[in-house]
Length: 363
Image (tube, rainbow, N blue to C red):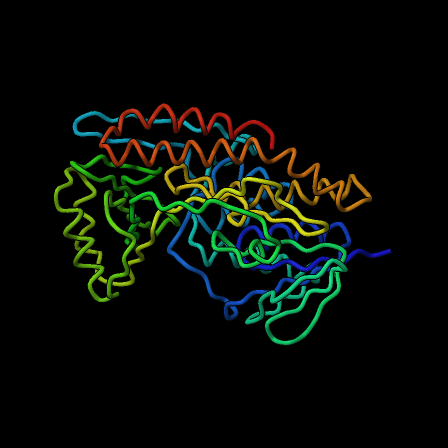
């Protein structure tokens, strides 16, 4: 008998889980509160674990083609530069990680989900869930399913409906991002330690990259969009090195977001409902691994549901496989954020390298 699932959230975690389950024959519907095609931010990094999980779905090469393949992270601190070579996890001749524009990644995931018959309903969220798995949507309609997946982000409404407790913390940092032309010297991720902040460049295609800046010791305020480009250029002013050459390109469409983490303290599931991705465990962006955890969640959840005929047993097995790994990454990212806030940049480099090595282990 065909099993059915409703996925709340058409982001990275939700689309990956939907695709993985549709490949196993589940009837899948994604409900997304935002309008069709809405994505936030300029780009992200698909690290080795991301690519490994995507490769299991046959999607890694499409991401490599749309993005920019890389193997190194170079940390520049004054005159010193330290390069971390990341392990390749998807075989020889293929990159260790890929920088990619968020709309391009979403297009790869969404197109595959639709090809497999996943139904995507936009501008509809989850309003209520009862013990019989009757799921009422905000558009007034109701769904009945064998499984409910909450993949609706760090401020998850589904998590609240289920009564699952999560600690959401703001770390006194705001991350700025702006899209620029990729400089020829940016063939991997390059970060810079400034007097009080960090910044860097991430290629997302052969033509484009984005500049990021982590501002320390600030309140989580909202600034007018038209003020952001000038403010970001001013904040980059004290930096030295090649990153300052990119300041004139920062003219519009700057994104500024607070650095927050989230972690569910207790079980990630209730009955036949489970939380994945940022809704369960959102790390700081410094580890560039939030997407990896979200993608792995979707793949691992489908694996456990394929192994176990009973949904609740599968959810318990899924959490058992994921909790230690995801918790460790969130905690390490918080430690890195704290060290950055105290300008102890060099102490973050071995933490980053160690965590990437741990993430290279099987999920």
